[in-house]
Amino acid sequence: MSHGHAGLGESTPGSVFYEQGRFGRLFPTLPPFAADTKLIRDALVELGAPKGPMDARDKLADPIALITQAALSVDNPDNPTLTAGFTFLGQFLDHDMTFDPTSSLARQQDPESIRNFRIPALDLDSVYGGGPGASPHLYDATVDGGRTTLLTERIPGSATVSVDNKARFDLPRNSQKTALVGDPRNDENLIVSQFHLAWLRFHNVVVSDVKAELGAGHTPGEVFAEAQRVVRWHYQWLIVHEFLPKTVGQATVDDILAHGRKHYTWRNEPYIPVEFSVAAYRFGHSQVRPSYRANFGTSATDTAKQFFALIFDAQAADADDPPDMRGGKRAARRFIDWQTFFDFGDGRKRQNKKIDTKLSSVLFSLMGQPEGEPTSLATRNLLRSLTMKVPSGQRVAKAMQLAPLAAADLDDLKDLHLEKRTPLWFYVLREADVMANGEHLGPVGGRIVAEVIIGLIDGDVQSYIRQDPDWEPTYGHNGSFTAVDLLKAANVVATLP
View 1 (cartoon, rainbow, N blue to C red):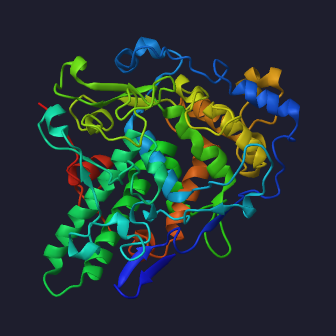
View 2: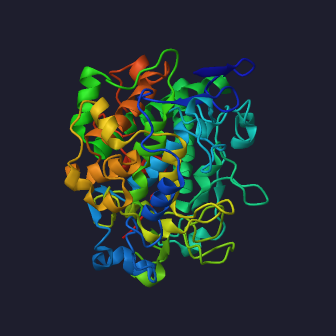
């Protein structure tokens, strides 16, 4: 899973530059939830259509009201246990595990024949690429000859629009504003791009600390390898001890860590199951808020001076500084003040949405989709379950020896004839709503997500679980490391009154 650069003595994670993985199935003997017929496709399109059963029908006119007035979100309630940032932490993890640029919504496909253009490991190859030797464009050539430090760039004018007069940073970009990152999807929106930036800056902090600790006489390759190990282990620890407990429930995580995985196994090396990538792990789409407060602008109290915006606005013209949070842009106000997204104990956090079968209306009008394909994210997910021949939620529950949802829990699908053989993605969302009040995943979805993610870390011979399972983080507090600790260590948190 790891590859070194002999000339530099580097230890870099596996990446797209070296090898690629495949997709596969947790339950290869289970049939697809339905035959790929026009009748079924029409039913899925209807289920996922704008203003259809899965559309929360948020009132989209006022982004500030959408985040400050709960009454506008009656059909898309907030999750009291998860703050808004966990949606984008989950997106970042997804991009570190899987990348499939070739699959089509129009034809059935065998997942084992599809390349995963991302190594199936939680090793931050989306950040490090192939390391300084193979991905020099990601590294700062002015420091140690480009062998230790990741490249970041200041946002011109950001200090004059920030409440604390502090310059903000962005991903490095070329002359056409294309982000220089190991995975272009981490520039899909402003929030995930700034989260990627936090990992770049955290790595650079660790590099400085490693240099001080090791002292003179160590090569840049040795400094980089040790800093990378420290960063990766903190990342994996955060996943196991914060992200997963909040996403699937602490009891599920504890059971897997104590008694092992029941369903996710492999013969030679880890892979990504379609039950995970096409269904269960897409739970995060239901967590997305229609709008967010990106930052506090020049006032921590006056909303008129803060940057509120829809996550995407298909009606907004493309511009250098559009009124939404699309990625691929740089402007003075396009940075994140993280107090909105994670709990810093100051009362400024906002919650994400519950895990249920309602998606924010902005996600039914995606930008940049191929001509002729649906722009509804719900429709795209449902059709992908069909083309990838994913089994029904009921059959997966039975294979996992778990009680399926009661028939009454899926009555609203009767007219579409999907109540008995329900697409796994929809089933996982409904299960979370019914069995966990939408606060975390239910038994089927939670077990799939936790087993795969823990299994990927188990399968990485360089992970902290394999190398030193008793290891504890050093950049958090009391042997812990959270997303808040990451952002503080990376020095990307606004100083607010």
